[in-house]
Amino acid sequence: MDIPGLPARRAALNLIDAVLRRGETLDQAGGSALARISGDADRALARAIAGEVLRWRTDLDELIDSATRLPLAPDAKARAVLQIMLAQVLRLETPAHAVIATGLPLLMGGPRRLAHGVFSTLTKREVALPEVPSLPEDVAGRWGARAEAIAAGLAEPPPLDLALRDPAQTAEWAERLGGTSLMPGHVRLSRGTAVEHLEGFRDGAWWVQDLAASLPARLLGTGEGRRVLDLCAAPGGKTLQLAAAGWQVTALDNSKRRLERLRENLKRIGLEAEVVQADALTWEPEDKFDAILLDAPCTATGTARRHPDVLHRIGLRQIEDMTAIQEKMLERASGWLSPGGQLVYAVCSLEVEEGEEQADKVSLTAVPVVASELPEGLVPTAEGWLRTDPGMLAEVGGLDGFFVGRWQK
Picture 1 (cartoon, helix red, strand yellow):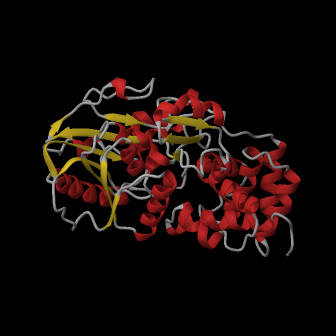
Picture 2 (cartoon, rainbow, N blue to C red; picture 1 turned 135 degrees about the vertical axis):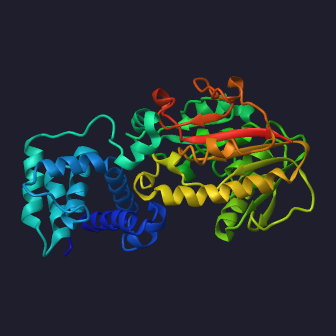
Picture 3 (cartoon, one colour; picture 1 turned 60 degrees about the horizontal axis):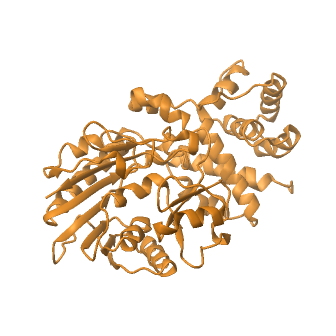
């Protein structure tokens, strides 16, 4: 059936199914789900629809259930199609007639009349989504008292953050790119900017990096030629930061594909680092390091505003798996420091098991984070750690959720 726009909606349906049924990330699912779409605009539309469904799924389901006499099964295809249809009307401002024309064909041979009736009932009611998305019950339970504030930061996809090779040129690049800066070496642009077409991209003046993701490397200061190990380094944002700050960087990661991207980024920016493909749980360095940055594998729940699939893929099992790996890595990294050397541990996770509880196990001497090291509006915890979440700095576009701790040997 050759209906304009239908392939994008079918791809969105496949993306959502891959996340909810197979536990894949949106990025993992994109390879097969988007393979049959030729245009960039349609691929972007499919990702946008899937993202909005996953961001607002709890609230979309509540609307659907309010218009059905008997509840649809949680995994019913009709429910998924209705989620896609409602997300387009309520979040992407797609005209209702276009939604119907491209939505109902997804149920060919299925309950099209039911879906049409539910959609028509809800649009006639002029229903709306709340200002803040409702979190899945298990997620809200894990995040406890923080859940409401975090959810407030998930309503919109994030802006585009750039990290500058030369922080001294912050004001110049903010003006040239039409952006704003929240601290030296950072420029924030509005969402939807085509990165490769921006001034300075080809010249290597900057790279894309969320503001929160840039903070762990900043906490190590300037290198002045000293040796630093960037553990789990790919795709390389923190390696670039450390090299630009004068560190002699060893960048280690076990992913060949991701290290290729790291090398490409180093070449584009014009920086150097020793790149090592190895497993951090078995690798042994020849010499000690003056500093180590461990951006550990984690559940990545702190990236929910840009990757809303984590709201539905991550549970206690995944958290337990990650904490076991993190604990081993922390123990090994602590032994690779020279006397006086500093260790920074970071995870882009909102789970206390991966952050605060891991920090409590470190046997080194804590070096508290201080407010002057952070963007205005962020403060360290009482323990001297850094904890960010998507609800912070919301008035200027927010930031990802991270936990960061620092110690000295």
